[in-house]
Image 1 (cartoon, rainbow, N blue to C red):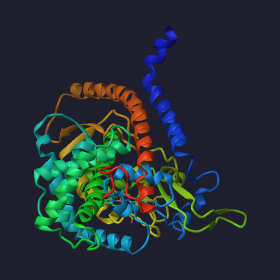
Image 2: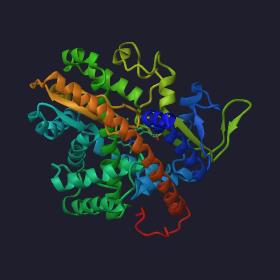
Image 3: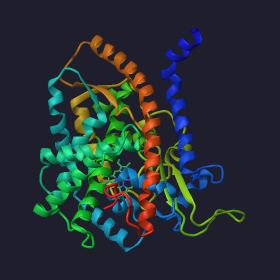
Image 4: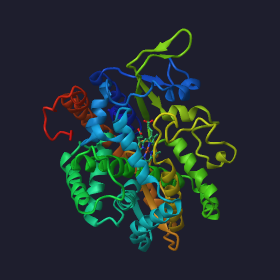
Length: 453
Ligand code: HEM
């Protein structure tokens, strides 16, 4: 009896990890063991960059069973999302279009990012103390920013709601905390198609796409990837500061210095890379050394956290000051991928806008959090915000932090069980739909409305 009571009481501390292990084993069983981990038993860290940059490590979707799952999560239109296009003229045209949209002057990007953040956070400034989920708070900021970047005029409230519903649906399904809801996603596609018809976009879209495909392209890159990535990056940045009160004095003293904020952002993206794994499918055999090679058609899984942890002293420590002496170029640091093999096209604008939005945020709020900060932030970053001109009682902040820590633990348990069930359902559903396999086999998907354009 005592043992059962102890097990139950301590569940928050062991159950989430146990469920994670069961989930991983289950997913492997269902999906089949696939992929060569890099770094891993066959490939040391020292080969990581060269292998990632290898010209034959260039396949994106075709031939990997796990592509069916990614396409399922990124639907509709995963087959024309830049990330998933195979190399070739179609990819080149799409990548060129994305670059055109992202090439706005730094000053304009900074101004727009700060204005969007300011407008979204303004109502919180009236409270003494606000309890928020950082990812939810950040989504409207980036919905507004990217809508204006794409269409050239401010984001109407209806569009904002549709963009957030779409991005939330994608990210919660990816983390297996919710099933996917195609209705929410398709509603955005329809809206974007209408907006394109009525106003067009700031730049021409690939003319080999139908109007619906053009809407899906925009949805994939700007209203899904951009919103999710920027909201998560900002969540990590604020969450990290909220959990390191020792940074506060320095932060306020150096808030106007780009270099200080750049170090803070670099350390955030080092410790919490947004990508867990990026994969490539080899189009030719790759010689590793005289004795071994990687066969054609292999799936290489590049583990960002393992790589980024490998070359730093005390990698678990969050220490922005380490960047005073480390050069990002020569470090084991690739938050935006590797230059030679389809790196993130938004690296420049993402860093500039994170800095501007971060500066605006920290100028307005002191933040504190007692919730768990993990790379995948399934808790969406619970955080307390105190406007700089308000002074709530310390006791109120302390009790709010105690409640937050307990709620986070309890949520961790319920969430991990939910992830196990929902993840299994989605993996099985993705296997049934086989969106990627049907696409490359040139077959119509036998389940209309399930994700293919
Ligand atoms: C801090 C924010 C961001 C981070 C850390 C990030 C990180 C990355 C990484 C690591 C990759 C390469 C993955 C691989 O090798 O397969 C990537 C690719 C990509 N990212 Fe980002 N990203 C961010 C923001 C954005 C934004 C704002 C957009 C859109 C506006 C974007 C669009 C893309 C696209 C389209 C690709 C695929 C590139 C290709 O295959 O040609 N990302 N991102």
